[in-house]
Amino acid sequence: DAKTTQPPSMDCAEGRAANLPCNHSTISGNEYVYWYRQIHSQGPQYIIHGLKNNETNEMASLIITEDRKSSTLILPHATLRDTAVYYCIVRVREGAGSYQLTFGKGTKLSVIP
Amino acid sequence: DGGITQSPKYLFRKEGQNVTLSCEQNLNHDAMYWYRQDPGQGLRLIYYSQIVNDFQKGDIAEGYSVSREKKESFPLTVTSAQKNPTAFYLCASSIDRTDGGYTFGSGTRLTVV
Image 1: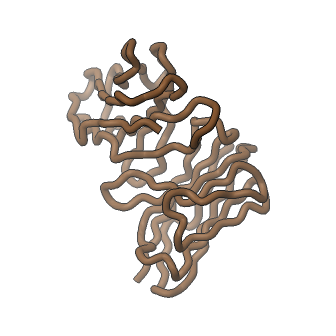
Image 2: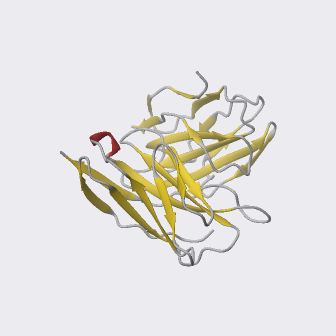
Image 3: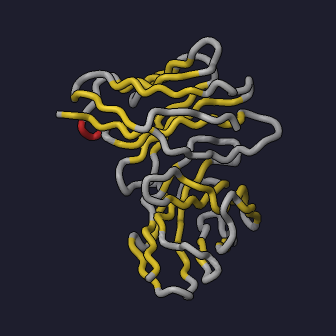
């Protein structure tokens, strides 16, 4: 699987948009980008995933650059409950390879009142 | 409600004793996973099972064992051969091996003294 790079920590003011970047410059054409988050001492929670088009759901939006070498997770109106570690993961879509998710250290997002 | 149940939430054991962590899901998912998390670190894959009566080693399987006799259950045994067993253990499931939208349990924090 392609390796991802995320900043170790970020702050965001409550009510503002949180933009979390992820670099995956070695991503291949058959790999998805997944985002999860983990609130302290809980299990990770799936947020969103995409291949090459931008995606939006009730939790967040995912913007993937045209060359697919980076992506940004956007929380449109951050609340204190969004304080968590956010993981960006690249995973093979189909064919040979390991399907299992590999979690790095992620980005610790702190939402400030 | 459907979900994954891990029990107990906290577990204390003496060094040299084997201990079994429970993981049960009622989501009718085929695939199940065990991860280990150490403080400030990402998740590392211990074992995974794609279907009943089948399982494969993950990245850090040494000192652990699993079974998958029922679709709903995927218990993890931490044996005395595991040199540093104190950690936060997370169980997850997905519809099948190709599904990247994992559902995680709330975890078991194991402390060996």
